[in-house]
Length: 118
Image (tube, rainbow, N blue to C red; front, side):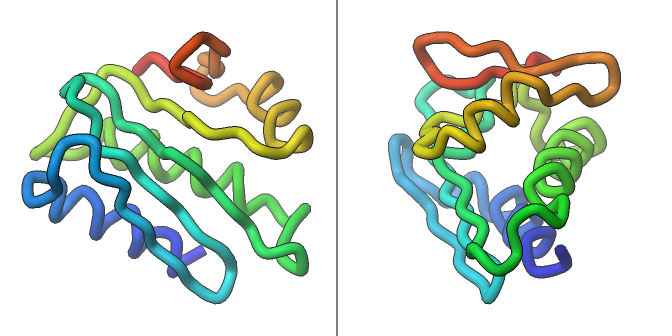
């Protein structure tokens, strides 16, 4: 999980240097996170999340989403109103996001993707 935390921390740290509508990809041994810097300053978009097959079903996706939400909540530099998982290419992730609950809130599926309102 440490490698995913580093990816998220790096994205927050360098957020202002990324261009709008730019996809920012981070890879590690366990998978990949792709962020999309939206022109909407209220949305933190996790464009895609990929967990390598051998590391699936170990709670990594849940841990990544919890860390991302907590990082946004505690960040002194960026406060997004929504965390959005935009590209859901697997039925497993789709079903997981439908039942995901954290801090009494959950993701809602809409035309922009799965939205978690902060």
